[in-house]
Every structure is written in C-alpha cells, then in structure tokens.
Amino acid sequence: MSVHQHLGGIIPIANFEDNFGLTYPWCLLPLDEGFSMIQKSVFECAIAGCQTIWIVANDDMAPIIRKTIGEWTYDPVYYYRKEKFYKDKRKEIPIYYVPIHPKDRERRDSYGWSALYGMHSAWYVASRLSKWVVPEKYYVSFPHAAFNIYSLREHRQQISHHENNFFLSHMGETVKDNKHLPFTMFGEDFKNCRRFVNKETTRTYYNLEEDEKYPSKKLPINERWSARRFELDTVFAEIAESGATKHEIDWFWDAGDWAGYRKYLASNNFIQRPSKNLTTPHKHNILCNTQEVLK
Image (cartoon, rainbow, N blue to C red; front, side):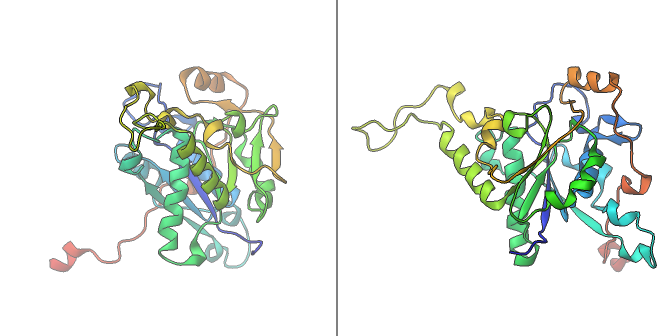
C-alpha cells in the first residue's frame, strides 16, 4: 500500500440534536467574527490534509450551507507558499453534499450514523469513477467542536498515516469516550462499525422464538430501531486503536448546545478566522449555459 493516501474529510450535519431553537442551521453560529462552525470544519479538514470534503446534510439544510461554503476550497498549506508560480501550485479541495438515504431515516439515523453514511457515499461515488480516487482513510470533523484547529498542521503526516489511526484527545478522552473530537478511520473500520450498529440495533419485531418460522410480535414503538439513539461511543466502538496516535489538546469546548456555546464564548480561548480567501465560498464555472445557447 502506498504511504500517500486519499484522505476524505467527513462533516456530519444531519441528525444532530439541535437544541438551539434557531430559524437557521445551527452550524452557521459564529466561533469568531465572520467565521461559523461549518466554515471551521471545512478549514479544519483542509489543514488536516483531506483531498475531498463530504458534508452530510439533508435537503432542508444543504442549500444554505452550500451558499455559505461553496463547492471547493484551498489547501491552506499550499496557499501560503511563496515560490515561483505559487498561484499555479495552489491545491483546490472539492466539497460534496450528500443527504441521508431515505431507508435509514427513523431507523439508523443517529448523529454518528451520519458520519458513517458520509464515508459510504464517498466510497460509492469515487468507486464509480476510478479506483485511484477512492478514499482509503477518513477524517471526521464535528462543527461544534471548538479547539485549536491550527495545531493539526504539525500532525498532518500522522493524520494521513497509511496504517494507524489518529485521535484527538482531551483530558485522556476521545470519541470512543463519547467526546465530539476529530478522529480518523479506515475503510475496514467503517465496515466493522456499520456491522456492529446493524447487529446491536433492535428492529420492528421481537427476535424469533424457538417454534416460530417468521417474526410475528412487534416491539413497542419506542423500543424499535434503537440505533436512532446510539451515541458516538457506540457507533464508533469498533475503530481500531492498535498503534493509533493520540494527540492531547490543551483546550476543548463542546459548543453543541447553548450551555457549551456560552462557555466557549466566555472563555479565554478562541479560534481565529483564517484569511478571507480561505473562507470565501468558491464555485465552479458553468461550462455550458443552455439558456444562453438558446438565445
């Protein structure tokens, strides 16, 4: 296996338990002046070394997020390099938007499942194009996780390591302790996690009894499809930790609700907004405009 891998960035938005009560998507809340949570995650994936970014958002939120984020962004590592023809050497990172599959809604669609489905979408789309563009490793970023994202730059090689996973840790806890901290996982980890979720979840009917050929007795409604309520530590329980790198960060705030968001704003920690060109939404040019041709 090549040491250099295609690292896909996954940003789950769908199925987040939104307690903010806003009239617009929660991920547009600012972490700094003119720098929202979703912009933080996109920049975080870019600085971590992701070659593609996949935002998992259903159709009710995707349009406004797309207008804010755009269709591609720059790799900040290559953006700031000052050398001959530096503008030609800047790398662009495409951004894709995928909704949760209808068959998973109200069944397995927990917040952690959104990340898993983003990985499946990245693999499915890329595998139909070429085996050379299929992500071999995935980096998961949570928009409401506030920490020093610039510290990822020095761990870029470890994040993209071809054998070992990478976890951010705070006070000794990672995503496997239900902390909403970024981490990486391979395709095999994805298969193990998906298999574990499908095994542990309840379904519509009770399990078969000895004298039954087909299930006949239904579970109470509130007990059906328990995977809808699985926490991150359950969804990602099967991620391999052998040889993994765990980077302990100095500070971390879970701004996923009003209490955590207020604590972050009141703290002495903040995430400084990158340069404007790294957060401005970029869109691809339309190759052929049918309306103009008809005129």
